[in-house]
Each structure stands twice: as structure tokens, then as C-alpha cells.
Amino acid sequence: MENDTTLLKSVSLFSGIETHDLESLCDCLSAKIRNYKANATIFSEGDAAEFVGVVLSGEVQVVKDDFYGNRNILAFISEGQLFGEAFACADITILPVSVIATSKCTIMLINYRKILTTCSNCCEFHSKLIFNMLRVVANKNVILNQKIEFISKRTTKEKLMAYLASEAKKAGSNSFSIPFNRQELADYLYVDRSAMSNELSKLRNEGVLEFNKDKFKLL
Image 1 (cartoon, one colour):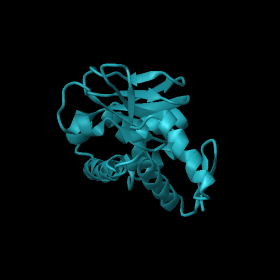
Image 2 (spheres, one colour):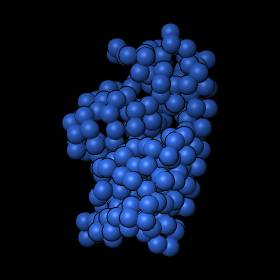
Image 3 (cartoon, helix red, strand yellow):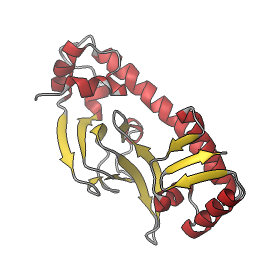
């Protein structure tokens, strides 16, 4: 399998692994490359939790639909990031979530057992891979805790401001873009879209922020 090593070098799972080792590593992992159209389902709730996905290009969302069809966005995964690793490493047999491509994307799929079990060739870089996987899982836990901080706020306004302040800090500027449209942002923060839109309008009228589609500025 031919791999674009430039793309792979940007992936956190492969951090610190030399370029000349990447192709051998992918062969060792029996990695598969798949292309998906926007809105395609990559993993479905109820699928076997066997694979870790690596976003080589494009973007995906991890989502959970309740009994009534209401969608909650659990995570936004961009280029170079992983999805499905927590469920695989926790030895959960059935996926409790779905993963949806939000744009045209290229995904590398790896059986998690191949990552966590050193191969018969005793590849020197495999131990680095396992270390990277542990770091990815730890970082995801930090992100999840941050999201809990957002959604645990009592009001829609407080949830919005906590999230937007976090995005501004991440961008290092009071002007920034977010990866969600209005419905997706409401689904991410677990709030009603109309109520959220009303709060955004109030905040703009109060001179707290400016926004245009996915672009925001805190004042």
C-alpha cells in the first residue's frame, strides 16, 4: 500500500516516527485507506468496535442520536486526528455512537489490536506507536472534560460564552472561526437552536460579541 508520508507525519498517532519507517509501519498495521463523500457514514452505532480511524483529510463528527431522533454532537475530528480509539482501547465490543463525514474525506482504518500488540518483527517504532496512542487517549480525556465544563453551565448564554471563550483562547485571538453551523453548535452544546440563536442576538446587541456565520469576535 502506498502512503503519502507527508500526511502521515502530521498525524498524532505517528508522532516521532521517522519518515522512512512509516510505510513499513502501515504495512505492519495492515492499514486501509478509504475515501468518503460528505455526509457519508463511516461508523454506525451498533457496529463492532474494531477499528481506529485516522483523518488524513477532511473532517468528521462523532454523533449520538437519541430515541426521538435528536442528534448530539460529541466531538469534531479534523485532519490528523483520531476517532474510535477510546471505545477500541476500552474493549467495548459495540459502538455506542456513529461517525459522520462532514466533508469529503480520506480515512485510514486500523484494527486497534494491531496497534496495541507488538508484531512478530519486533519493530522498534511500534513501542513509540503505543506511547502515542496512550497520549492521544489522554488528550481526548482532557477535551472531554472541557466539554463537560461547557454543557454543565446552567444557562444557554453561559454555555455559549464558555465555549466561545475557549475557542478564542485556542486561536490566540478574540477573532476566530468555529467548526459548526448553528444547528451543529446547538447539538454540540445540548441546547435548543432557537433559544441559542436568541442568546447570540442578545449578546451581539449588548456589544459582547460580533459574528457572521462561523466567524466570531469577542469584544
